[in-house]
Image 1 (tube, one colour):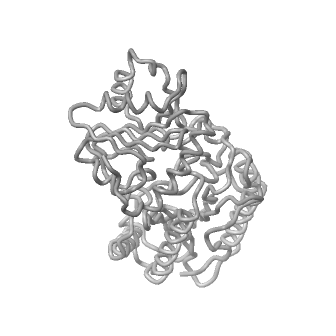
Image 2: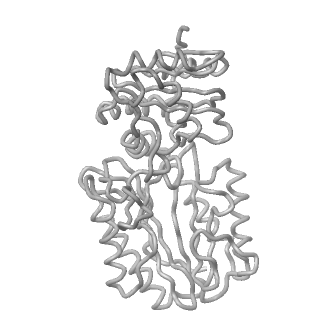
Amino acid sequence: MSLSKAPAAPIQTEKLAQAVRLVREAGLDAWLTFVRETGAGSDPVLPLVCDSGLTWQSALIVAASGERIAVVGNYDAEPLQASGVWTEVVPYVQSIREPLLAALERTVRPEGKIGVNFSTSDDKADGLTHGMRLLLDGYLAGTRLAGSIVSAEPVVTRLRGEKTRTEIEKIRGAIAQGDRIFSEIAGFAKVGRSELEVFEFVHRLMAERGLGFAWDPSGDPIVNSGPDSMIGHGKPSSRIQISPGHVFHVDLGVVSEGYSSDVQRCWFVGDSVPNDVQEGLDAVNRAITAAAEALRPGVLGHEVDAVARGSIVASGYPEYLHAVGHQVGRLAHDGGAVLGPRWERYGSTVTTPVRLGEVYTLELGVTLPGRGYLGIEEMVVVKDSGCEFLTVRQQAMPVL
């Protein structure tokens, strides 16, 4: 089947070129993404390598040799041809078994390794379903490729994490869209309005502007006002109203052009900011600054978290009960290394080295008695010798 000369989608072009290098550096012969019926939800890595849906069992193979082979159902073949990013598109009708085995036989050396998408620590590198793994094992059984499967986590986490210039610009665009909404929230959020009213106002703006949600829309944005609000991944209340003396807090994630923002901002409801609120804001910002100063290529996530955690405790506040940062990309929680403590729930993600080009949040907060939750979340990109803030930091407390 001849390949179309249509222009390639830039993200897939960039990411597949990156993937070839990562496959080689991981010591793999091939990286296989194995999916079906992607319209019902699919492998999280798929949008980075394929800009169309796939129906039948489909194998997207990136080989250390540089070959990029898509083995797909015949009705799915044409869009992949048109994308221009695959060196070979192999359509099938009755069974994927023979064309899949032929492609792997050609690209995998004797006793070589095939990386597939499973992980016990990183959900974004765990896209291979159990059923598809059973199918794959069945296809390989009795061939020289049996026993060649290993985790592709080293490829997937770096492919998602190490952003290209195009990806960084798209993330900046999502942040700008979020900043615009935050400015409009400040005009809408008046004394007497409920958390739910603010939430619904943001949803109207998102719909009008064709923006997506960086996490489940039922909880994006998180809206908190005062001490009785549901902290964390809660839902806005129709009963809790913005009232004098409250800290008003919004955690908003916007998706624009396929990439996310994840930012938290706060306001004080009153004429002037009282000392306890100012002290809380200053303590949170000191901890964020400390984390930013510790964040650089090669550092481990738990080391960055320990610096921020030590800072907030030294300021007289309790430890926060989460990681100080996570990666952002296609999604608000984008997998890979996490800037968190060495708790079992984080697995190996907090002992994974930070790498150049990764985008992280730096986030924490304090609960102020009688006032509510004061949380700030910024976004940074890792540079050669440190990190650069992508957001304009909130270092003052505006009033409503």
